[in-house]
Image 1 (cartoon, rainbow, N blue to C red):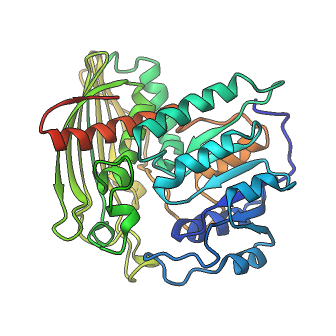
Image 2 (tube, rainbow, N blue to C red; image 1 turned 180 degrees about the horizontal axis):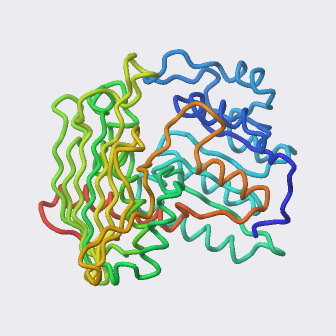
Image 3 (cartoon, helix red, strand yellow; image 1 turned 90 degrees about the vertical axis):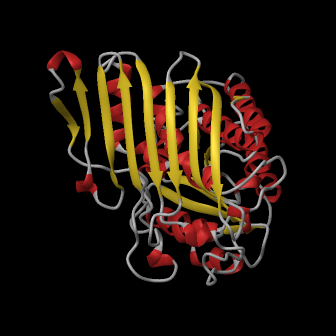
Length: 387
């Protein structure tokens, strides 16, 4: 266990109060009986987002959630405020700086929004630093560092992972994965610079960094494959230059291969309720994992749980279908309630409970390794090694 189990609400700081911070993390944590929001941090007194023009000021958030406000992580950490865990929802390119400062505090749990980072060297440094801090903690405390790929905490993900680890389909030899999102309204928007413009250390930016990381995180958590090389071709927006069509072949250290495909061009709007109105359109997911004894199949529309199921088919049964779960659930982007399974697990972990690690720092690192290689391969026009 991470610490002595406690029913006392854990003391949480929310760092980053943009679209996702104000639309999801703050209201959900405020409604969660496990959580006491003690601090809200943002570098801007008046946060702005092209995805939501009606954000509250930092001062208004402090009053609304009865929390102490800070203008920097440094100010939070130098205060005497008692904090158990930190949820980071700052822009992607800031994750490394924020993460390293939090890791310097030996007993802070961390839930980092995806992607882990947008820079391969930074991702490796965060991973190494976390492992070093784990080896120096005292007593039975074990720090959590989770990456918020919410699909990875769904019940179906744990069932799929257990099936693969228990050799239900034998040795994994090939994986196909498709992800389609209705998000052209973001990737075609010149105002969405954090989503579309490369920052320092990035070869490119777009659907790869913003979305395909979710699919990769699921595949690597379930299969435990280790990527070694990538060949990729990216199709880009004529408006922003962001990639909106992804095609990649990933070779793994054991010889297994992954065929990856994704696009932001599904018609509609995934976040219609929070953006321009209308009905939100779910992500389309199709994952097939083939082993030398059978296959595991999972896919559907993540807004319609009846659109798919999790199943295993074995060769020695003549392909008879074994249903592991009747429903399809992938990302949890519901802005109601008291948080997705990932946040629930993080809060439970902060209270000392044993929790399923849907996406830890290693899964986070693997996703960055592959996405970084995808952009480098597209630029080079040939396969490149994973760094």
